[in-house]
Image (cartoon, rainbow, N blue to C red; front, side):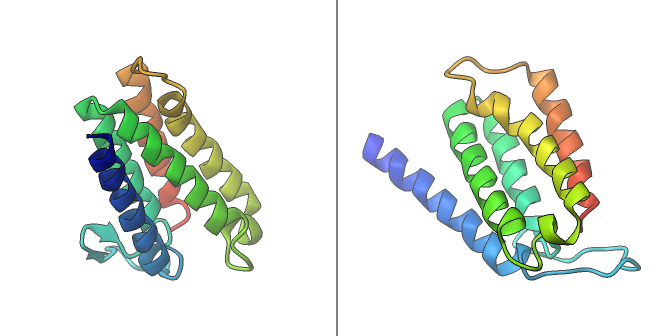
Length: 142
């Protein structure tokens, strides 16, 4: 059973990393654009892949799968840091450090309670509020 669970989680991580690389890191939108297109449910915007990962994390949390939520939260944090802090000249930390810091802090407020839960679910109202706040902050960088 553990082997199958590990394969499922690994497949999910690879899926989200592929979306980030294909759609999140290179996609951009203009300020005048009102509607962002999607591919397979992921916004074709700079922050679309992070938004999709956060939605899956929150969905896992809502279903009571705290282990999957925590694992995906850790993956989100690592992918974010790799692409947006250390990702070169187009990384958000290089182009707009203040906005990077805002989003990074909002992400931490969302994912830290999930990663630190140790089997006891955090307060659902606080997780929902942190999730919504993080989603709003991501919109600022699209």
